[in-house]
Image (cartoon, rainbow, N blue to C red; front, side, top):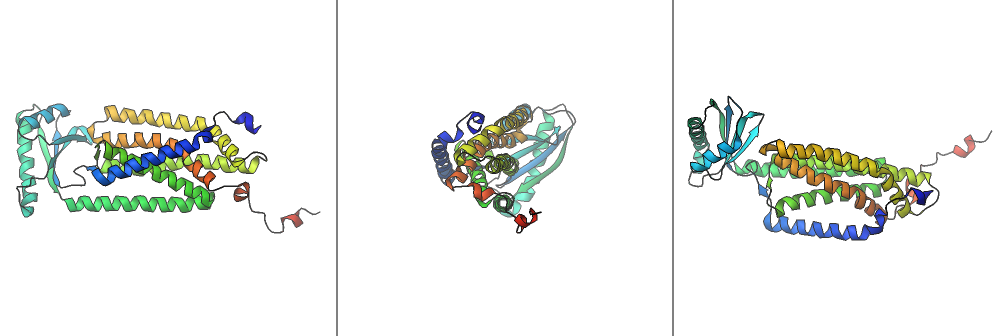
Amino acid sequence: MLLTEKQIDFMGVRKIAGIGSIVLIIVSIVSLALNSLEFGLDFTSGTSVRLSYSEAVVVQDVNQTLRDNGYEDAVVVTFGSDRDIRILLPVDETVAIGEQAAQAVIVGESIAELLQSSSGSEISLLGSDYVSAKVGGELVESGGIGMLVALAIIMVYIAMRFQFKFSVGAVVALAHDLIITLGIFSLFRIEFNLNTLAALLAIIGYSLNDTIVVSDRIRENFRRLRKGTPLEMVNTSLNQTLSRTLITSLTTLLVLFSILFIGGESTQGFAVALIIGVVIGTYSSIYIASNVILYMNVTREDLMLPVKEGAELDDIP
């Protein structure tokens, strides 16, 4: 029965998959060490100008107007609705540190007047702020600590619900997903902002859910099936959860690609990070988490329910 249920020999290529993952992780770490991340204005210093239009905004037209008037480095994104935009400008190095907040107000008023003169819509200046590099550093630190705390809590939860070897596999898979996602952002110089940081935390939740489903089936089969090696039972479990994994991943990707193409520039980083995370997370729940528990020599005894003391006496009439 065990062999007839098995359709794809996932674990037959586990060593190749493991080597591939190690290579990707090394490339990601090297890229992060050499190139770091392309931090957006949320994490670096600069000016943020928020404007509201009386009609829907054509972001391309706003970008073109700014470039034609000397703001080549400006980044325009929509937020809230299609009538509100945020313009991000890098810090002006010629302005003294103590005068940067006042300069941000002046820049905001100048940009509002400039865009008003070239637009038929009524434009309101919602605010113009200076974002300091110190705030960005605190955001990076807080985000990193948040991810480490999340991984630690997840490890404790999986160890309590399943078994310690499963918790190690789950955390290794999550770390694998985060490192490779960050590595892709670093390698291709994709802007990393607060939306991307939120996406990384969402990746942890998505990948964990997938890993728990697979782990639950592995535990069930270890207890239910009396024959077969651990490798065969893991393979069987992966095949039994394959349809659920693919359906969940594909439906999630449909939504994310919709956000990527029609959601505007403000959500592109979020969508790209989650698309990468979903693909890598689906792969890691099959080849990383399961691979780790096999290398840690999980056995049927590890997962058997403890026998209650005196249970044999209870069965005696």
